[in-house]
Amino acid sequence: MAVVSLHFKSVSYTGLGAGPRLIVTGAVHGNETCGPKAIERVIGDIESQRLAIAAGRLTLVPVTNPLAYAKGERSGDRNLNRRLQPTAEPAEYEDRIAKVLCPLLAEHDVLLDLHSFRTPGQPFVMRGPPDNDGPLEPFRHAAAEARLAAHLGARRIVDGWMDVYAAGVAARRERALTPGAVLEDPAYGVGTTEYMRAAGGYAVTLECGQHDDPAAPAVAAHAIRQALALLGIAEWPLAPPQGPFECLTLDAVIDRHAEGDRFTKAWASFDPLARGDLIARRADGSGVRAPADGYIVFPDPAALPGHEWFYLARPSRRPI
Image (cartoon, rainbow, N blue to C red; front, side, top):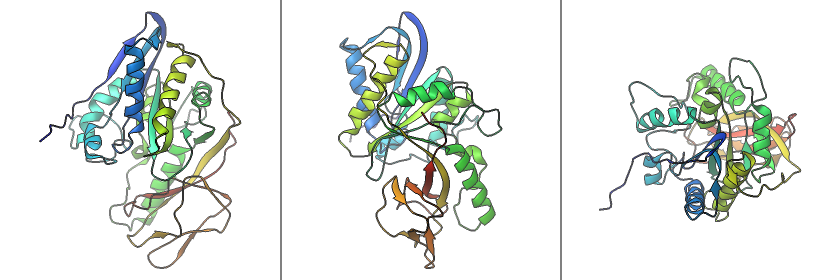
């Protein structure tokens, strides 16, 4: 029987010039393999001297959640990208990963987190909030984050994660009927990028395409190289932003309430919606309709009752 290695691996390169510190993470979710493939390509480029690290520091984490990756599933014991924080008494595998990952993130200035998604669709970037001093996600690097998002090769930029997740938690608490519902405080929405911003840096998530899209690793590798060029860490040609950009904001999260809840069709992320469109039917036969014109995002037919089923998005007032 093959031995499965569940240690945490990171590879770091330090340039001889002064510069920022970039960390790139793959396989935060174990069934999202484009990140590990892309990171191994970049490691190969560096080791063969096709890519030169000239300044600052680059840390590459090919597989952030080894247990989930070994299982070929989204999670090991739980979703690593929720409630990410170090804890004194780890109860689950992901808690042990957090004790290593969180301090590593805090050592860096910038995070590029590589993901993929279940349904077909084009790559897109998730960015954080505008600069603010609010209680949910205070931030002061919005301009730098937008510049990074613009250079990764995707033309769709999405924001609003923490706001909409906090609203979803509040709605679950008010309903408080679904067994297994996530009723924790809004900090449950904190993942790698949110933790990085809380530590004083900035971060983006690149959703590189559908899980099994053969083009997704190339999308991810291109993004890593462009981030290195933009930040001045590597000697690599910097391509101009590939606009025009479609900027969207998440507007609402809709939970699945029961096993009998079903979508009316096989929705893909960013399928357009018109107000009143029938998106799904609940187990009791009632319809779930679009409250306004917009888009469906992250539809998950396999969502557990009490967990997020799909998101709604609308045009954002924050251009790139």
